[in-house]
Length: 297
Image (tube, rainbow, N blue to C red):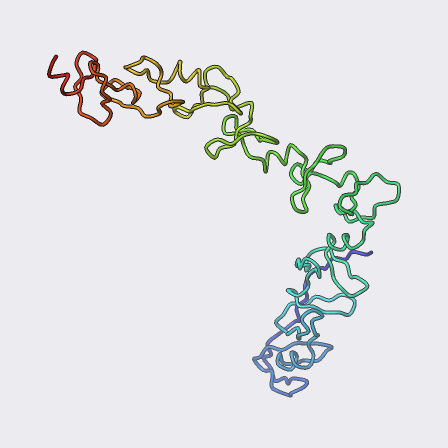
């Protein structure tokens, strides 16, 4: 198949007469008017459009004197109508091929029609040459390249996004989610926490670095902790039982007063053990009392 390239659209030469001169067809005086010279005849633009203009092979309308015209093998097109029959890409300044059925195609679409042509360079893939076949299409081995880094794929693994081919590193860099901790791509697996993706190996306790995937954990000030480290290093201590207030297990409600904190189930009168949650109380020498017991102190 032969590929062609246009030198550019053609425009008819139009001029303005200053001396007496008549249109070849309507005999209208062309003095001071635009006209077209075609086949040595001087024609007003109205008669040119009606009687002389070539018909566009695509839209079947006349190509007027003010339009840019493209031609190939006795066929004519408006510049805007000269497009690939498959993808509709404008071809006025691009390589194209004329098919036996009369269709005009860009090099890429034409090569897809011909199964033995390389999808990269559009040249013939010779029998016995090193080539790559993918989805019933052929490439020269050196033409089957990553869309991003342009390096040949050869024996590497690759991934496709639409019609584009990517080597694994470029695909991960461009499309994979980035780990919230290390900012590197997550190529496989990983976990999600608070709508953020993490590598499993990055999702570890802030203190002991123990992996937390599949384990109980909690967070504090944008850091995650295993239960043991949270109890030891982060959690407030209950002023009543002196154990850490973690929110795990029995009783998750907390009572805070001044600089002290209690489990709700530990917030009881020191003397009568009445629960003082949501009740009036008196703090005396770091201990809490109900109103009745406070009066007896």
